[in-house]
Image (cartoon, rainbow, N blue to C red):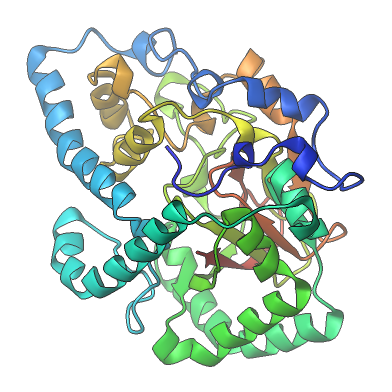
Length: 387
């Protein structure tokens, strides 16, 4: 389910002619649903149904008990527009962590929830008028492909590198001292500590037209709600070796996923040169046109947040104990088998953002994407959420 404006809310004739976009073979994905594209046939998959006996009633109950509270949370967060909320000044991660921590943190977000929900209701009752003349070139490409790539001027890019040097050195030191995990590869900027840096990026986005493009796509004013510094290198083993217990190698679609957040857009800024072997950000063009089903997106987010999308053997067995209607993942790429129809169609439409194409990309995070699979060197980047 989507609350944000999707490409389907804008007809092709509304988008200016001549804008670049993926209306060729990638557009064929729009005729499919995510349930079709992301389905590896778990019952017959050698690492799932093929690796375990039929689940016992006790195991089925355990799986449902683990999923149920997160399913309720995902439904509540969806309808309260939770992913549009800005991070608190002292807490850049916002409503993150375990379920208990989120519930404890919820009261301080109530005023922001009310403002966000009120603004949304007003736009539903009095929707803004859209016209072909209102689309910038970046917005038109974003509507067509789900991603728009451009570049900051060199002086602005170098200025940003200088401003982020302190947090970057802190992150590099932390990565050497801690185990490699998704969170340990990041620093989340807060407005209290890094307000000037967030302001600088907002000014750069405004000058380049990225804020306008995001606003045209979402149909409402936008701003930066979250900003994260991330570093990856070949030692990030947590991104690989999903099924060593059954002898399956990493799939060619490894780490393809959709994000849990909705009602927003994301952007990536390269702080280092990124080539084919440096973990470029990749986006499956046309995937934003797919249908998600009535509750498909909520179920996928709940399964992921409940920790049922992990690939260790015990979690996979618990995942298979769920009713078939709940066997959906946001992070499904590692489950697709090489040579399968879904694997080939996604790889065929995948667009790889290397530095020669641009150093900043704006994308719909509900489109299928991945990155950080570094083979050599490092990828240093800032990820920005706009809502």
